[in-house]
Image (cartoon, rainbow, N blue to C red):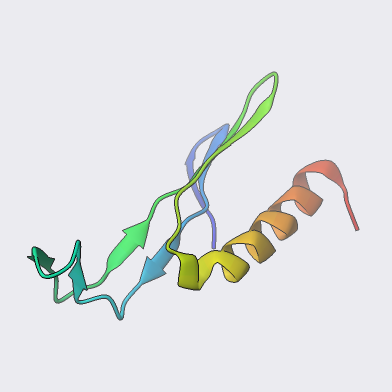
Length: 74
């Protein structure tokens, strides 16, 4: 999943609608949470990322898709 934030910045994170508690029982949410990652395309391409381990494979998969679009990988 990707959303354009600015011309050269894209949000490429993950929305976790199932999450109800995080940081143990310290915090709770009824609307899920997001793992925010940003792809910045300047002179160099930078990925600022975070993801919870259960979403790691999906996250890496989408980074591959995004990389193939940007760099023409196949």
